[in-house]
Image 1 (tube, rainbow, N blue to C red):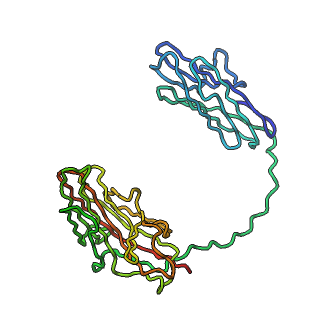
Image 2: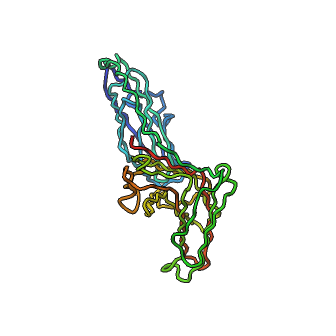
Image 3: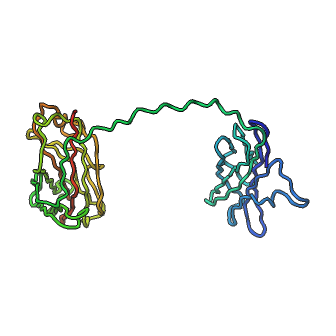
Length: 338
């Protein structure tokens, strides 16, 4: 061990890497503290803190070294060390209080084998002078919660069907179907099927379908109900039996206002590939988050708004594809301006 006295100090030990050739090549790393003492006939090769690497390496290896020290003690060494070379392990005591502290050196060979050795530093003397005690902080003001939803529109699909479904874009022969089914998250889900026919020129002329689903169980009229500041949106989503590896279901959140369909991103790349139920949620949507720009009008002069979601698929397969997917726990939280 190295000993430091007082409020600060430093110690330097030697760090060796060497190898033996009999009976097999074995590489070793040894921490050799300046203050170490050994019995007669012993030397640093008997130190139990050796890092043993091998057998089977070449005659020379390169080690990547890292040093781990407790807080308030700085320890470092050359980060690279080769067979037969020597580096210093420098330990800066800093302002650590008296005590015994482990310093761990880890070495990883170019073959990926790792070993570690532990060195201890004993600090004696008076503890460092603590800075003046700061008065306790005053109590912070109570946290003010964000605005509560003015209205929540939601459907867990356990009741009557309160939706319309409209194919807004498609190739010839595409089909879409919707049903309420079991195995939701939990209970009942709204399950959808898209059938896309094969195409002879899928790269330049793929088959495609987009279906707009609009909730009929409630709306929002800013002139009647007040202006909005933002919208929070969530849904649970799943894909069944993808027709090919990586097949995705196109999805976006929808606001319809004054004849325009505005959409907002809710999944990365506007698609999902979840084959188990996953919840997707986005908070704080403002008009700037919708396309086309400038987005829906949230002000008190804005036209009535209805809400929903869309699903879409594209196929470049000559054989066509069928996708099956579900939605559950559809939720729209409308945040009022006051």
